[in-house]
Amino acid sequence: MRSAPEIRRFEIFRPFERYLIHGFSTRKGGVSKPPYHSLNLGLHTGDARQAVFENRKRYFDALGISEQRVVYPEQVHSDSIVFAKEPGIVPHCDALVTDQAGLYLSIQTADCFPVFIFDPVHRAVGLVHSGWRGTAQNIVGKTIERFEEHFDSAPNDLFIAIGPGVQQSCYQVDRVTAQHFSVKFLLPDGRDHFKLDVQGAITEQILTKGVPSRNIEIDKTCTHCQEDLYYSYRRDGKRSGRMMGIIGLRE
Image (tube, rainbow, N blue to C red):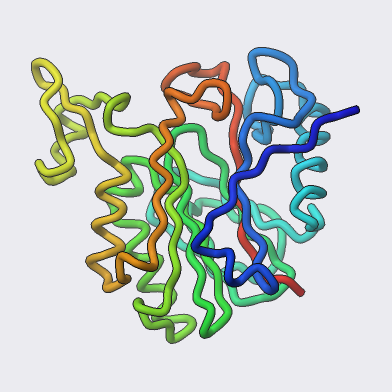
């Protein structure tokens, strides 16, 4: 008997389950062969495309959604945010927002942080891909601003979950990268190198926009360390698969 995909869900969204669908995949429950075993959801990897298609079908079935209603941002490590109105691929984009029921936003990660946003007052959702470049450009803070502009959202009405990614203990960067961040997020790690806390920087950006800490859930799992559960590009390079985050309003 085949195993079902193992999906991470956030407690902060539990009160809204009757009209909100969300999830973040692990690497468990798919058909991909090593080194992509097993639930690789990234087509732009060295994995067999048919395996990825089957993995996506299993994942979407487990979430109870149609693949034909999923929105895919191109993800270019930008601060570009798009108001999604229809399914399909959105070029040059790293964050999506929508208030359309039955439209499911997605992002793919393998160390970068997925950030899920929900406004239960105005029934709007957002999903952000925030690696160090996106974080340096404050893409999460800008997405919160987009909620205010598009949906008239108040920051204290937003509920936000930051999913797993590469944690500071495993994320060494050089001085060129480090200069984009406050020293509070840096630990010296040898000559001209530092350990960078990307998740901490994202959290500060959310709080700075006025979202109360009680409305934020943070998964501090390290994708680099948890090889049995998550893909990691820093750990595995081109042999890494991809996880996928999904959020959307039920029809």
